[in-house]
Length: 82
Image 1 (cartoon, one colour):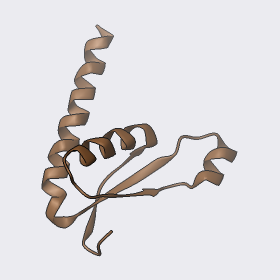
Image 2 (spheres, helix red, strand yellow):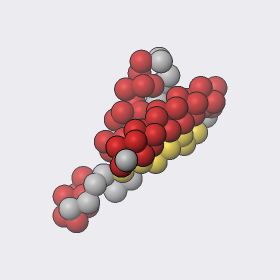
Image 3 (cartoon, helix red, strand yellow):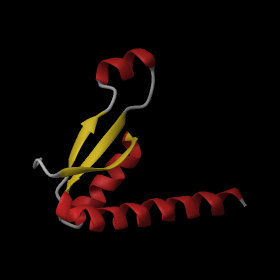
């Protein structure tokens, strides 16, 4: 990833993979970095978290996509509770 990469989001691996698929579909380059590492995740039985970085020039577009993706997920979750 380029030196001008900006942290877009840190989230659980499952959500990060969904976001990475959306970024791929929109041809936005990104880099994903493990927060905890596999050893700690296995030993502690916790879920991995990933940091997603995008180049500065793609940040606004990537943020809009992430906001839309996760606001839609929140809406679905709220609907399921009724």
